[in-house]
Picture 1 (cartoon, protein in one colour):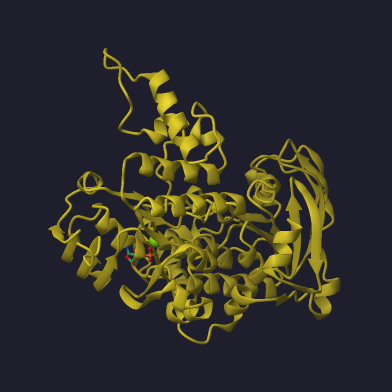
Picture 2 (cartoon, protein in one colour):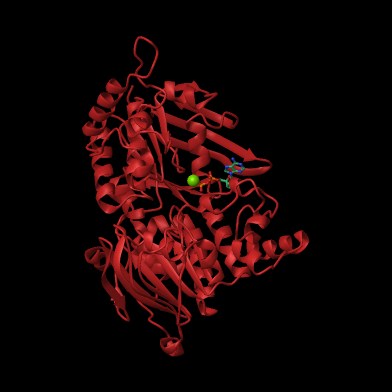
Length: 502
Ligand SMILES: Nc1ncnc2c1ncn2[C@@H]1O[C@H](COP(=O)(O)OP(=O)(O)O)[C@@H](O)[C@H]1O
Ligand SMILES: [Mg+2]
């Protein structure tokens, strides 16, 4: 029956503890289409997808699959109906092999009931090869780059036989060649009749690969269109509303690097790296960061720019070179000595430094730094400070006592940053500060970072996303294969020029 959508949702509503995440949403997906879902952080995208994938069993409204009313009680129900989801938070098991992850829950067993290893390796190997993924099925998941882990998770969902596949921000961790590979794969699978819902904050990706787009705002559908009939400006306008010029620039065109403004040009050098090197991660890295300056470090996944802040922060200390803070050489053996020296670091996996079960306000005040500085705060004072940050950074939902884990990724990142508004380090290093965030939340982060910069902090922003570096940095270093390949300062730079230098 042509004309019947593959999936049809009507008036779907869902609340979490009295807060409405979805306020009566309609959504349709046709067979053989790639349908983009975009919108601000907290707009309700993941919640709707979890309803479709059976993760949330309780909701209002109606869902039809190929015309029939369905109501999934579990993710397993949805899987059996041919619906698979790649979650925003990777669901892989890092300690297992690639093959076990691909076949998770479906491992072949021998006559004795044990997992049939040779068969499993062979099946997984063939499947991965079919998808064009070059990886040893025996390798441990944790040993692979994040981007490859993500592709393998997608491979797992495909292996489960899903014909409707939900991808919740799959490209956030991928390098350009990996994205190209993923898109080629999606197009091939679409031609075979599979359907996709593709959530992404990368609007170029949406325009490049999708057939239709639905825009969510505040738990409701704000707009919908065929991708052929719209452009980036249309998407941005419906996602954030008019009047967000700062970000529009970094999304749409050329950026004039501000360079150190006025006196900042001879502001003191806070951090100086001379000939830093660490194993295969990076070599011969020298640079300075001045007070009141944001230094962007851009590179493809695996080019060393994310290893650098981690090393400087003492997680895996550099083996070669000298690091100076305020002119004095410092030896950073571990993160405690780095904190003491005035360094702060917000890593790309925020979960490693935040406490999902603890309330917001605690996450804004817990830090190694405050312990060292003996800045113990009373809970009442902690909540007051948190309330201030929540308002200033438009953290949603705005409740200081809410467990952090219930917030969207973007809002968690704002919480991670808020901490440094109270406890000022000398150098703040941010790794992928806006990864997986929507335009509105990104803009909030840009505002926070600029504010900290204007107050004299030296800031390093390392990212694999050109837009992130372009929207934040005063000066940009591009890394390639562990070395600094080029510097952009006092000039105009665009996404294309950055990519060309990497
Ligand atoms: N498990 C949960 N418990 C409580 N609140 C939640 C939960 N999941 C999502 N929310 C809330 O629902 C809203 C929508 O979140 P989400 O669907 O994750 O948005 P998006 O994916 O568009 O960023 C947010 O306000 C979020 O805090
Ligand atoms: Mg989401």
